[in-house]
Length: 524
Image (cartoon, rainbow, N blue to C red; front, top):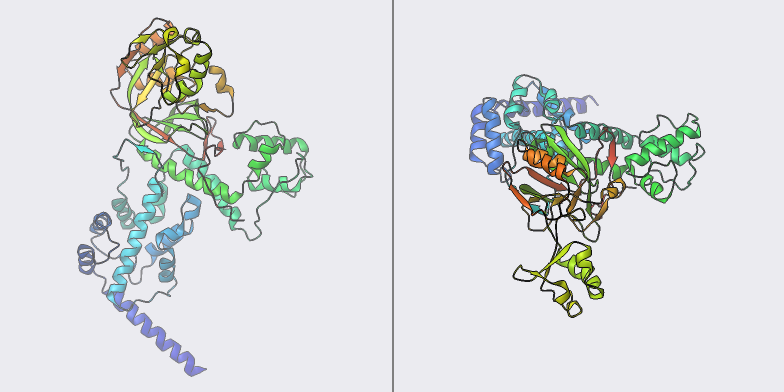
């Protein structure tokens, strides 16, 4: 036994000798040469620049494998341990390798091993802190008309600065955007991550529709969703109903306190799915936070049927919108305002003209006058609708354009905001204001109708708001020709599909996946 113990000590001494010797050889020159020569295929040109900025700021000293100093490595390791609380995945950042170095199981046979480990940890740290600042994904968009994305932080320089100041644990807080959505979604992520990590955690399915304290699975789910603090304390039914209503509001449902089919379906979405939605969403908002830092950005979230204008970490304007039906979805895009049209004509899209209006025209051309429409031929000239043989036309042959004139019944209302895109969608007013009282506002053919178009018009026009004021005063005019005003600042317009957010009162909301775009893993 003594011989075996002595042998183990000898092996440990040999291992420490080689480890110390190899770490000691990590000098400024060896690091400088290693980065400059770009020996590893994974060191892209972009990564090489970031590594050079970082190591130049620390004078090319090793910061993770310094002999006798494990502080930076430990700080970063414990930061990665909390990555799930920030909507990130620890395994994206060399977590296993860093842990093996921290606990002494990593083997460094040569100087190259130490150099590679040092650089890999730096690359992982740069990746991690970039994701803290900007998110780990960018919005999925069908059309991207703005290519240049701003950078709000010099992450390599900041990482070096916090290491030089021996304050690495504070960097994550500094880089986290202050947008309220990020704070509130982050709090819910921490709760769900803690909940799922508990040994006795199990997903709950509610079957009973009883809104009472006798519905044990309801109580468990209310606890998991963080609406009640304990499942063992008896609560009156009035409190249970109050919390059901709070959950219904969070799910975007009518808050009646009843466990109808839609409410049960929302409750029975797994906590793991909810967490994935939050992780997805918080990273979208991190990206947006930087993008809107120095300019106003119009953001339409399709599942929320809601519009917000962001600038400098705050919401400057918000309103309900009506977006596309599932059969005629609103496309995701990133573009910029090109012009504002006052008293717009509505040029009826071909599909609507042939599939919805043409069948009525075949019965009577009187709907043209009744709807304040005009018929234009291919030359753009107004044609007498009673002279057209509508019965001879079809969806395959329709050589006319139907245009609705300005007036109180115009489908576009008093104002239209155009932006560049390959699809014919835009933001516009609507005469049907009553539709904004609906919870589910997925009713259009793809365009976005605004609850308060003049408020957005004021933001777009900025100092030229007289035109908007005049528009409001005059109201709808039957004989007014459209007025086109070119944009000056080209305010960005972002239409995205984001599963979560907050309301005007700062309450967390989950949105229905109306277009069926999200396929979360239930992990039952």
